[in-house]
Image (cartoon, rainbow, N blue to C red):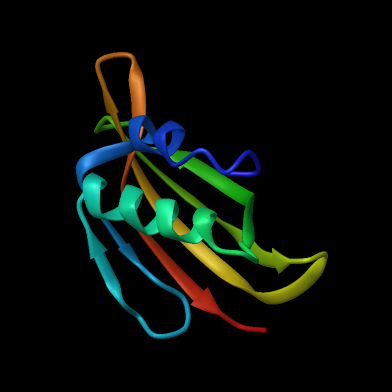
Length: 108
């Protein structure tokens, strides 16, 4: 994300990934839709850089899935513009882990 490469984000996402955004709870469904959103964001004159910092990651002992909880922050021109908590559901497909679902909550 820091390199503003939307194409690099795609392989981390399941084809039917779902993201619920932090402030307006917009639902972005599907890998292609999410990559388009990132392409648009990265093309902005003042793009926001988002960083996720995991606090916990728990791998299921019975299914090829994991849950990640943590904090996120969005920074534009070295100024934090929004931040909060997030949860992501991961699935292992073959040897790769991909994100199936993400939900962001804007708290600041």
